[in-house]
Length: 345
Image 1 (cartoon, one colour):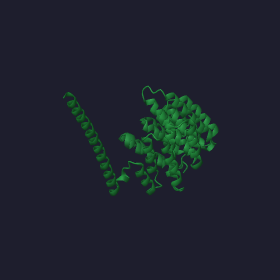
Image 2 (cartoon, helix red, strand yellow):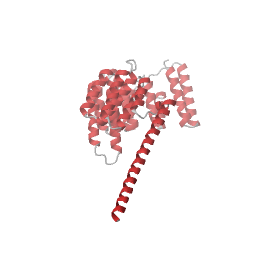
Image 3 (cartoon, one colour):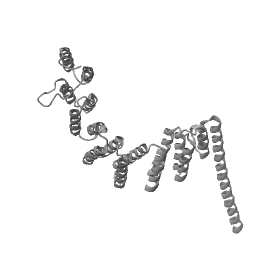
Image 4 (tube, rainbow, N blue to C red):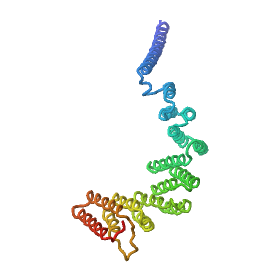
């Protein structure tokens, strides 16, 4: 009858469904067994340690390499890939307890990873708390420099991504951190130099110059020359070579015995492609203009030998036979004058 044939087709359907279910279950079990076999083989031949894929793999790795920041950081990244922020934080805290106290660099690497995590996933409060904790266990200035470097990169990334709405917020966060760092470590030139670099990279030239003036009010006088020299070098690279030249001119006028400053200035001109300006600097030492100002440089004969060597090397790379002959001629004249007592040794 039609009823019995209907029952039979339902039974067939049910049988088909249950066998399909069983096949799926068997396939899943097979995959699981294959995975277990693969993991066991990886453990047996040691490749599990090279390519850790589970928390257990990482636990084994940190047990055998407790001082390796790389392993701890990879373990943190493993948790972050699963969106488990708290477990990543816990791994960092375990690393601080496990890494030997002498391994300061390794610990600082993990602190950097934790600070990166807080910058990306935490709040301003959790970030500041982590900075404070990191500062208790490491050189505080280094901690702030690392955080500012991360924020600087975040501003760069936000600037380069089209239509990034968070550029303003990211910039404000970085600005505040750089200001805070310079306030906290106002007698340290490296923090001011990092801040100059950040502003000049962002084409904020007026702010950078105002900051240079402020830095010189805070830094001890013996750090002024080095700070201004760094600023002038950054102007060549990130701002205006002309402004860089103005600063170097003032520095060289006030420090006529500092050949190192002159050489840095020359190197920047060469790197900038202004070989004639570099030649003019060499020339201003060898043939000083007496009516312009007093003889600008006061170098000893030994230093002058270094100067001619540097000049000749530059001409070998960027000049021709005529310009090289000119250096040889100037060197011969200098030696002759020196021998006749016109130059101090």
